[in-house]
Amino acid sequence: MQKNKHLIILHMEHIQCLILGSGPAGYTTAIYTGRADIKTVIYEGPLTGGQLTQTTEIENFPGYPEGIQGNQMMDDLRRQAERFGTEFRMGSIVEVDATKRPFLCKSDFGDELLADVIVVATGASARYLGLETEEQFKGGGVSACATCDGYFYRGKDVAVVGGGDTACEDATYLAHLCNKVYMIVRRDVLRASKAMQHRVMNTPNIEVLWNTNTKELFGEVNGFMSTLQGAVVVNNKTGEERTLKVDGFFEAIGHVPNTDVFKGILEMDETGYIITKPKSTATSVEGIFAAGDCQDKTYRQAIVAAGTGAMAGIEVERFLMENK
Ligand code: NDP
Image 1 (cartoon, rainbow, N blue to C red):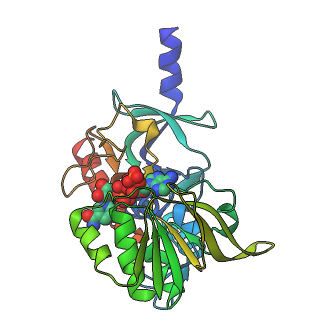
Image 2 (cartoon, rainbow, N blue to C red; image 1 turned 180 degrees about the horizontal axis):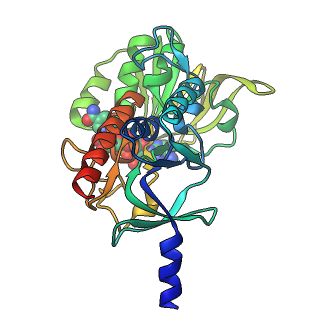
Image 3 (cartoon, protein in one colour; image 1 turned 120 degrees about the vertical axis):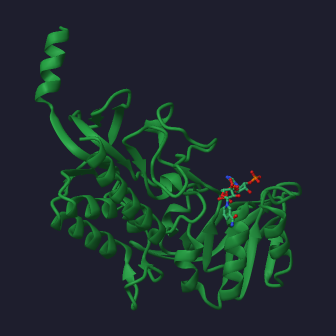
């Protein structure tokens, strides 16, 4: 039995660099490792191209003076990685044996392979309220990224849900661009730091709605096109309902890093973000690196993810040179 297992492993596919995830971090890593002649395979995960394929226009990624559609940018990055020999596979890696190198990995399609190094670039997913009406307006008024989409609501009225640092940062950012910002906060306090709270309280065009939850969103829906027109909110102490006429509804109620596969394997913070060594993408396991939003809860920007992807690519190359 043991002998058979050994034979299977001998005949198993063995690659140098396995990348998990196909956002800016994963593709950028592959551009670097591919150019360094490292055999690189990407498992693209449940959403080829990652979170950016869910947004409309990206205007803050350097190099695109006219802006670019999220799908187009991810397609460009993918083709750039392909040019240097990256192989793309459908599916996700669902099991990793990190006790020895090369690492034995299994995908949800049942493929098994050995990888000398792994780069985790699985990203994070924005948390949404889960309202039935929310789905209709994603991309048509509902957004989880004020920095990405705020500009489209210049001079308009918008709402931000949440009471943490992100919500406060988003509300003050939007207050510069928009006519009015409603902050929908479910308790009578903000979770955010005092400095952030102070900024919110001192911004005249932000109105905080305390003890408030969102009941539903409404607007026009024409096939795939939808335009948000407002939200019905309810005071959870008095039961009083109020209709907010808003064009944009920004949700800032937290993100969930896609790191479940590595629980118990890699060191993480209490919210599941992978901890990397300072100024590095190295994780707590030698030979496993992490780049992009799965290890970054502060910036969460495509350009930052691409930057850490470049770091991972360089570190993978050095690691393979030193561990031949
Ligand atoms: P947080 O988890 O800190 O806050 C989430 C907020 O959303 C909370 O106010 C929470 O309410 C609210 N919320 C959660 N679920 C719901 C729901 N279903 N309905 C309504 N409201 C809900 O997430 P953040 O993204 O704000 O921050 C994440 C981390 O990143 C934090 O550590 C933060 O400090 C950090 N950060 C730092 C920044 C900076 O320093 N510049 C900027 C942005 C983030 P409740 O309070 O009632 O639980």
